[in-house]
Length: 155
Image (tube, rainbow, N blue to C red; front, side):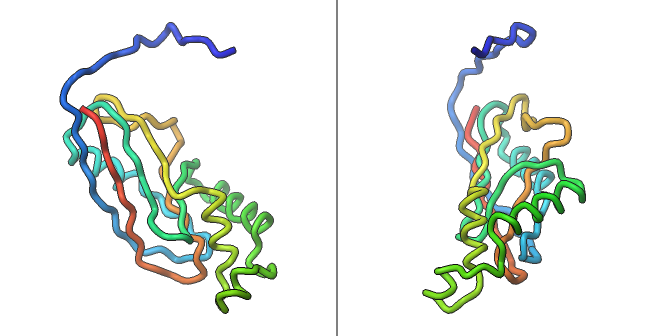
């Protein structure tokens, strides 16, 4: 059973709730390209003017995902390798047969990782672990221009 951490004093902030929505635009290489977007997400939070709440990052599209990892070359390569094992590009995907394209694995990978991420923030700072970074994963099989929605809700 989980216990309450008595080393941290919980805080209650009250006020009018604000909602701020912005977008991050960038190029990605496709083929399981992992793009660090933490600095851009932090900038959206700063521009929102909100200090306490929750931030959501959402990847529109069926071949992309958002998650957190330690963004270093070894972890990125390991993630790509695991995805190649779980959902390899060369497999016979029904999507490819039905639609006559070759990105069935891209859709499966995006579904496994997921299109959105929710991160709490306090005092205007994201609550992330020391090495934790927000990343965008492009699973499509070609380079693309991408757009990610960031919505900040809080006080």
